Length: 440
Image (cartoon, rainbow, N blue to C red; front, top):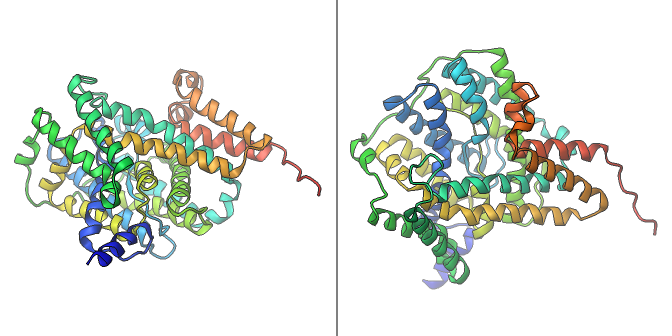
């Protein structure tokens, strides 16, 4: 019995290890809870700008859960060349929010969907040919991008810890207490726990924080009480409208999203599997990003991409088993057809999620630093890293610097440090002179 139990848990640290369902489900649930609020928040923001609310918004949220689950399953178990086979969790991307708010307010939600359909197909096709153009993305470039991703997400975790930036009680003592208890439980169990308890530290911390939040009256169950038990997600609920300027703008953002996917995938292979990512895995990962985003538009939803929070979770726990993460994807899909279940998941307060994610986001930064260390600190690499990170992280903290540029450039780069770091790292990698090998 004990030997069997040990064998089951050992499979968690193997990509294709065999584990029982009772072991897979808690780890899958931990993964989807880590990304849940970040997954639906972009949809809520964009829908609000487009004047979509009530039952229509509820259907969009259902579609968000379903398409995130489908995308995750395709990443885990590739179809032809689409999908990487890596333990990647997919979800709706924040990267597009700024440009979608502009397009939605100017042209309407139908124009967003048309741009997503075309942009997704373009990224997907580029992904299939990634072997030819990703040669310029060297290990030091990937390390810089991963580090930038980690730093860019830290404010997101901090805002969530405080209760959400739009919250009227942001930074209140209740939010500090709930977030602090949650992160303390996560740290203590991760540092001193053993076996499953150690690796489920995030889920246990979330459960303790949630119970505390309920006791403090911070959880609103009204959406659960009023929701239907079963309901279909949105499917072709809106027409497509194809607007060339909108399409070109969104394609540019898809290229930025592709760079984030490369960074996330490389970090996951490095931190979770202890090796460099292969060209085939990069190809499949980007292709999945694009084609599933195009499919997302059929569900009247915005694009999806790899989720950095979950990369941090893999780095923190070491759990890379595809079946475990697939169980989370199945839960997402089921929740998309059972509104009451989705609404229960959404009741988790922001401070609880913030407390859970802060350590995971720090793990992404550490993964990037490890990748940089493996690439080496040669004079050339130090110059590339110094310039790309300082300008990328520094200039985007002062978005007014981009006011002189056209709106398209500003929407892509002004507050997106990952895009700036990636562009500068690529350019510097191309123009900086190669270092000569020392003669023996």
